[in-house]
Amino acid sequence: MKRLSLVFVMVGGLAHGLAAQGDVRARLVGRVSPDLLQHVVTLSDSARTLGLPDAPLVDKALEGAAKGVAPDRIALAVQGVFGQLNTAARVMRSTGAAPTSLEIEAGAFALGAGLTGDDVAQLTETADASHPTMAVLQVAGALAALGVPRAQTVGLVRAEVRSGLPLGDLTNLPAQVQAAAASGVPPDAAASGLERAAQAHAGQSVQPKGKAKGNPHLP
Amino acid sequence: MKNREWNDQIKQVLDGERELESLPPGLRREAEAARRLLLEAIDRQPVTLSPALDARIMARVRSRAVSRWPRAWRWLSAPTIPRWAMLVPVAAAALLVVLTRPNQQTDRPTQAQAVYVRFELYAPRASRVSLAGTFNRWDPAATPLVRIGKDGMWTVTVALPSGQHQYGFIVDGRNWVPDPAAPTVDDGFGRRNSVVSVNTNNGRIL
Image 1 (cartoon, each protein chain N blue to C red):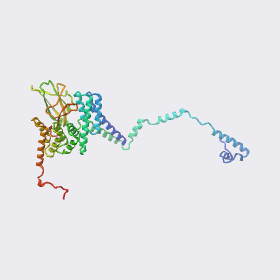
Image 2 (tube, helix red, strand yellow):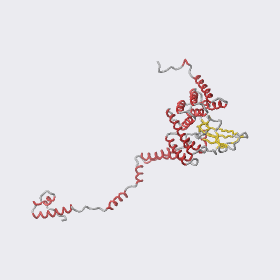
Image 3 (cartoon, rainbow over the protein chains, first blue to last red):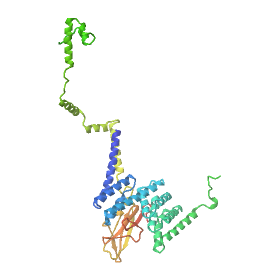
Image 4 (cartoon, rainbow over the protein chains, first blue to last red):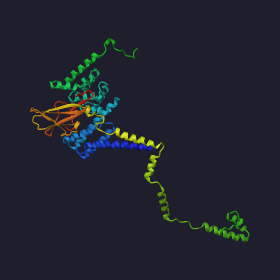
């Protein structure tokens, strides 16, 4: 009986893997060349093995095909997306987090927008119950994509989360930077102003100096 | 020689327990005849079996053996617990397939959890404009924009689930144009993709 159970589990796993492959194939067939299709299927298998989402790989292949890009160049771009997903998942997991597919995609997006693995790790650690990882990484990626320098992006997002301001204020940051840019303010200057405002809010919400808690490790 | 009882003294000679010469002359001849018979029996040619015999025997053995598949099935299904319990792994395997059934939308929100996003492009000289992105499998024909009035503004509203979405406008079916109102990222092909991030938890669009 135990043998039969093992066989059923193996068959189930195999069926799952084949179905996943079939799904990737179904999305790509007729849109990309057979060689590229096989390349993406292979990468998707690897992605699933590593616990990474495979949708971005398929999307990148479809995008390249829609834009009329040569298959070998599409393959390179898909490989690049795989690398970003893998890096994002690795650095996020290194903080002790167990990121979902969407969070890994958000991390990969932030990497693609110009942040580093360390930045993504820091931002993952910054996230809290009121400021979910996905939103934090989305905002950081959007700010970087708008031209806010990398270090400043991380500083602004961390300051915003630590200030205790609501999530809506955090997710509004890119729109504020965009609005400032539309009126002629460079992205870095706009981000500096927003960071100062967040720090000022954080300063208002700390306890009065006289009532600050002492170090519990000191007598 | 049939059923013949040998004298005990002759048996002793044949067994090597006694010398032939010690027998009386009458018994000695009889003992010599008995020894000759015995040696003839020992010196007989070895029996040679027909080569076909081996093949016939093995064919019979194989014909009686259980064939491979029934034997494998018996190995797999040898019940160590009640037979109804076979349903447990069957159900578990079925559940495993259903629960882990790969679906690109597995952990993505349904359309009911989507946020409606309006896309606009000012393209007064365009005869047609469409929108392609990760939300419509980059299909240039899937999401056409509609021209509003006569001032060259094109627009479309799309329901988007949570997550980052990269996209671009396609003007007149060939020119890819990024959204001037959205941040952009490198598309890996030497161009820029526009980005819209949707968070359905609070309905925000970045």
